[in-house]
Amino acid sequence: MPWLETSLMEQRERFIRDHRLDLYPMLELCVRYGISRKTGYKWLARFEDAGRRGLQDRSRAPLQCPHRIAEDVATVICAARRQHPTWWRGSGLGIPRWTCRPSAPPGISWHAAAW
Picture 1: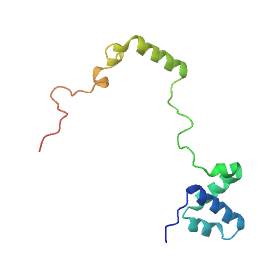
Picture 2: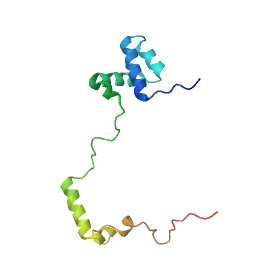
Picture 3: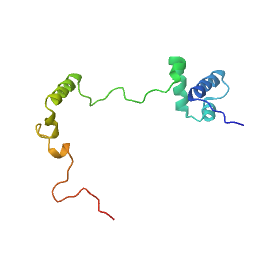
Picture 4: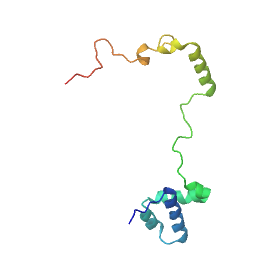
């Protein structure tokens, strides 16, 4: 007998169908589908909000980046980098050379000892 293969969407749709048929209490339904109650309620809420489309996986990428620079600042920096490509090697902006190109301080070796 071959294995029964179902997609995540099919399983989520079956979960919603079984919940609507009121066959099992929520806890038992979640145990049968191998999910937590929190996840079960999440899928129910998503289905109610967006229908079948709400059951699809969502991106986990953040909606905002708190340390992102403004677009106009990025444009100025990019223009300066194109105009003065040697500045970004640590010679013109007061950035120590070791921050741009790693090298060991005098007397310290970065290489591991050979066994």
